Picture 1 (cartoon, helix red, strand yellow):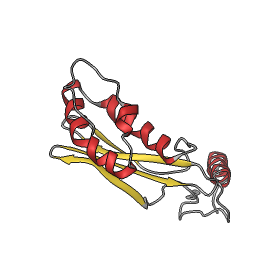
Picture 2 (cartoon, rainbow, N blue to C red):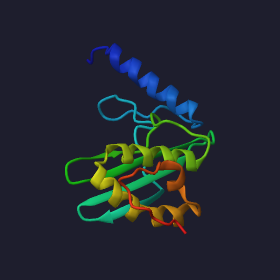
Picture 3 (cartoon, rainbow, N blue to C red):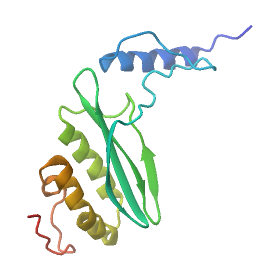
Picture 4 (cartoon, rainbow, N blue to C red):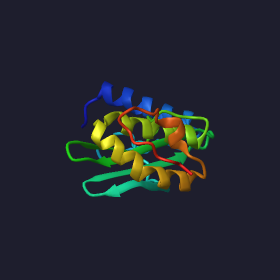
Length: 153
Protein backbone atom coordinates (compact mmCIF):
# COMPACT_ATOMS: atom_id res chain seq x y z
CA UNK A 1 0.00 0.00 0.00
CA UNK A 2 1.39 3.40 -1.01
CA UNK A 3 1.94 6.27 1.37
CA UNK A 4 0.26 9.64 1.11
CA UNK A 5 2.63 12.17 -0.44
CA UNK A 6 1.48 15.71 0.39
CA UNK A 7 4.12 17.27 -1.88
CA UNK A 8 2.93 15.22 -4.83
CA UNK A 9 -0.69 16.23 -4.20
CA UNK A 10 0.25 19.95 -3.98
CA UNK A 11 2.39 19.89 -7.10
CA UNK A 12 -0.12 17.85 -9.11
CA UNK A 13 -2.85 20.30 -8.16
CA UNK A 14 -0.67 23.30 -9.11
CA UNK A 15 0.22 21.94 -12.56
CA UNK A 16 -3.36 20.88 -13.25
CA UNK A 17 -4.76 24.28 -12.23
CA UNK A 18 -2.14 26.03 -14.37
CA UNK A 19 -3.07 23.76 -17.30
CA UNK A 20 -6.76 24.65 -16.89
CA UNK A 21 -5.93 28.39 -16.67
CA UNK A 22 -4.30 28.13 -20.11
CA UNK A 23 -7.68 27.13 -21.56
CA UNK A 24 -7.24 23.37 -21.69
CA UNK A 25 -9.99 21.03 -20.58
CA UNK A 26 -10.10 17.43 -19.44
CA UNK A 27 -9.07 15.12 -16.67
CA UNK A 28 -5.75 15.12 -14.87
CA UNK A 29 -3.34 12.65 -16.46
CA UNK A 30 -0.90 10.87 -14.14
CA UNK A 31 2.24 9.01 -15.15
CA UNK A 32 3.25 5.59 -13.75
CA UNK A 33 4.72 7.25 -10.65
CA UNK A 34 1.59 9.28 -9.91
CA UNK A 35 2.81 12.69 -11.16
CA UNK A 36 0.56 14.94 -13.24
CA UNK A 37 1.85 15.32 -16.81
CA UNK A 38 -0.75 17.76 -18.17
CA UNK A 39 1.15 20.58 -19.83
CA UNK A 40 4.62 19.65 -18.62
CA UNK A 41 5.88 19.61 -22.21
CA UNK A 42 4.23 20.31 -25.55
CA UNK A 43 5.62 18.97 -28.80
CA UNK A 44 6.30 22.10 -30.88
CA UNK A 45 4.16 22.47 -33.99
CA UNK A 46 5.69 25.80 -34.98
CA UNK A 47 9.42 26.28 -34.93
CA UNK A 48 12.17 27.66 -37.06
CA UNK A 49 15.92 27.70 -37.03
CA UNK A 50 17.07 31.19 -36.22
CA UNK A 51 20.59 30.31 -37.28
CA UNK A 52 22.59 27.17 -37.85
CA UNK A 53 26.25 27.62 -38.66
CA UNK A 54 28.61 25.38 -36.75
CA UNK A 55 29.23 25.72 -33.82
CA UNK A 56 26.27 28.10 -33.39
CA UNK A 57 22.68 26.87 -33.45
CA UNK A 58 19.43 28.39 -32.20
CA UNK A 59 15.89 27.17 -32.79
CA UNK A 60 12.84 29.03 -31.53
CA UNK A 61 9.51 27.27 -31.12
CA UNK A 62 6.17 28.78 -30.26
CA UNK A 63 2.51 27.88 -29.81
CA UNK A 64 -0.84 29.38 -28.92
CA UNK A 65 -2.85 28.13 -25.93
CA UNK A 66 -6.62 27.65 -26.14
CA UNK A 67 -6.97 30.83 -24.01
CA UNK A 68 -5.45 32.80 -26.94
CA UNK A 69 -2.10 33.50 -25.28
CA UNK A 70 1.23 32.71 -26.94
CA UNK A 71 4.39 31.12 -25.52
CA UNK A 72 7.86 30.53 -26.94
CA UNK A 73 10.87 28.39 -26.08
CA UNK A 74 14.32 27.87 -27.52
CA UNK A 75 17.07 25.32 -28.03
CA UNK A 76 20.56 26.74 -28.38
CA UNK A 77 24.10 25.53 -28.80
CA UNK A 78 27.09 27.87 -28.65
CA UNK A 79 30.80 27.14 -28.21
CA UNK A 80 30.74 27.54 -24.42
CA UNK A 81 27.06 27.13 -23.45
CA UNK A 82 23.58 26.21 -24.55
CA UNK A 83 20.15 25.17 -23.28
CA UNK A 84 16.85 23.58 -24.18
CA UNK A 85 13.82 25.43 -22.88
CA UNK A 86 10.75 23.75 -24.31
CA UNK A 87 7.08 24.66 -24.32
CA UNK A 88 5.01 24.10 -21.18
CA UNK A 89 2.26 25.74 -19.15
CA UNK A 90 4.99 27.35 -17.03
CA UNK A 91 6.32 29.49 -19.90
CA UNK A 92 5.55 33.20 -19.74
CA UNK A 93 2.41 33.99 -21.75
CA UNK A 94 2.04 36.86 -24.22
CA UNK A 95 -0.81 38.48 -26.14
CA UNK A 96 0.85 38.03 -29.55
CA UNK A 97 3.19 35.58 -31.24
CA UNK A 98 5.61 38.41 -32.00
CA UNK A 99 5.89 39.39 -28.31
CA UNK A 100 6.62 35.79 -27.31
CA UNK A 101 9.27 35.33 -29.99
CA UNK A 102 10.92 38.70 -29.31
CA UNK A 103 11.24 37.80 -25.61
CA UNK A 104 12.87 34.47 -26.50
CA UNK A 105 15.28 36.16 -28.93
CA UNK A 106 16.21 38.63 -26.18
CA UNK A 107 17.05 35.70 -23.85
CA UNK A 108 19.36 34.30 -26.51
CA UNK A 109 20.94 37.69 -27.19
CA UNK A 110 21.64 38.31 -23.48
CA UNK A 111 23.54 35.02 -23.22
CA UNK A 112 25.97 35.77 -26.05
CA UNK A 113 29.45 37.28 -25.90
CA UNK A 114 30.06 40.46 -27.91
CA UNK A 115 31.87 38.43 -30.59
CA UNK A 116 28.99 35.97 -30.81
CA UNK A 117 26.36 38.76 -30.91
CA UNK A 118 27.77 40.04 -34.19
CA UNK A 119 27.51 36.58 -35.76
CA UNK A 120 24.03 36.08 -34.29
CA UNK A 121 22.74 39.34 -35.77
CA UNK A 122 24.24 38.78 -39.20
CA UNK A 123 23.10 35.15 -39.51
CA UNK A 124 19.72 35.48 -37.84
CA UNK A 125 18.37 38.72 -39.28
CA UNK A 126 17.19 37.41 -42.65
CA UNK A 127 15.67 34.21 -41.27
CA UNK A 128 13.67 36.06 -38.67
CA UNK A 129 12.63 38.78 -41.12
CA UNK A 130 11.43 36.26 -43.69
CA UNK A 131 9.56 34.19 -41.13
CA UNK A 132 7.59 37.01 -39.56
CA UNK A 133 7.47 39.28 -42.62
CA UNK A 134 8.85 42.15 -40.56
CA UNK A 135 12.26 42.96 -39.07
CA UNK A 136 11.96 41.90 -35.42
CA UNK A 137 15.64 42.57 -34.92
CA UNK A 138 15.04 46.30 -35.30
CA UNK A 139 12.99 46.05 -32.11
CA UNK A 140 15.13 43.50 -30.27
CA UNK A 141 18.68 44.72 -30.78
CA UNK A 142 19.83 48.17 -29.82
CA UNK A 143 22.75 49.32 -31.97
CA UNK A 144 26.15 49.28 -30.28
CA UNK A 145 29.47 50.66 -31.40
CA UNK A 146 30.87 47.13 -31.62
CA UNK A 147 28.44 46.04 -34.35
CA UNK A 148 29.06 46.79 -37.97
CA UNK A 149 26.31 48.77 -39.63
CA UNK A 150 24.08 46.29 -41.47
CA UNK A 151 21.26 47.27 -43.77
CA UNK A 152 18.06 45.34 -43.09
CA UNK A 153 16.59 46.13 -46.50
